[in-house]
Length: 417
Image (cartoon, rainbow, N blue to C red):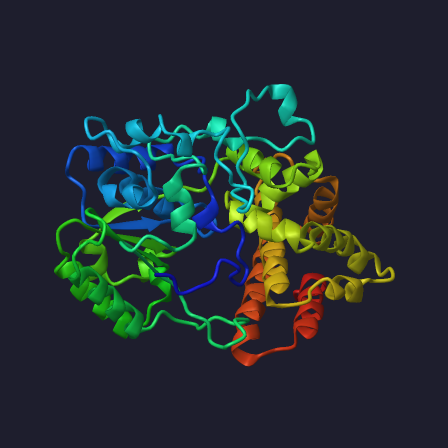
């Protein structure tokens, strides 16, 4: 079951169709060891910052378990199974699993055949094959038949709970996961497995549940049936009910390290420049989802214009604030602008505190120097940051005009006292 189309709002590289996952090998091995030792907990809370691969891990886990424990899935796909071997060992010898004969031209899995990657290739405009860098025991290639079936929504023993669309045209999502959706989950687990193995539910994310749906989920966690698995995506574990946390095994994912961020970005954007890579890695803070969103929505140009404006507002030159405002077309780009400013002010305070920052662009260094020179007392910088954060908090609640907020931000930077 699926409640949301693949072409979801702000859908950055749908985790359902992503065959690779980097930077979380230790967490994947922790789950793998639990499963192989027969000590698999029925509920896992996959938590961490947005855009680091939590949902991708959930789908990877689901594919892996279905490939091992639900043989009826492969039977319906007409895959010959040698019952003396594991399902993966059997299927590796079938024609359906052969890279040369398997036809996946109708579906874009962002997957390429195996190849040897050299250091020199990383510096070219060739799309990188990430499969070679993915050492997870949970990995299944995109040519695996279960991979395609999951994408098409054809696995009966899988249910996906996400926010539903609020309108028939599917242009806006509801703000919450409703209690009715969680009740469907209870019904799902009350039935016998249709394909002879685990029944798996993915909730993306539990942060979006209201009080009623949270209470309904708690009842399911308290009475989880055998051979059931709940995979709960969580962006902010501190906001979750303690009773839900206590009934789950917590798997905390860290932000993605710079090396893997570079690999992921070069795979996603083969023509990206080294300067763009540096700026994206600096601003996205270990979130590949955030980095892709910034790059595809003119975030780097927005950042460049912001850095250029800082010296101008103190030199009283012709300001180009309206040019910057023209790049902020919607709520998404406004949020990108918010992150740019907060990151810049944080870097400025760190610089003033004699903390060495590496790989900053010349534009940002110039902007930081301008601000620290104008405000020699660090308490002024903290005051600027505090007032700008307050403006960002007021904007949605009071529905303030975005252009007016941006102009006010520059006024705060120029005249904090």
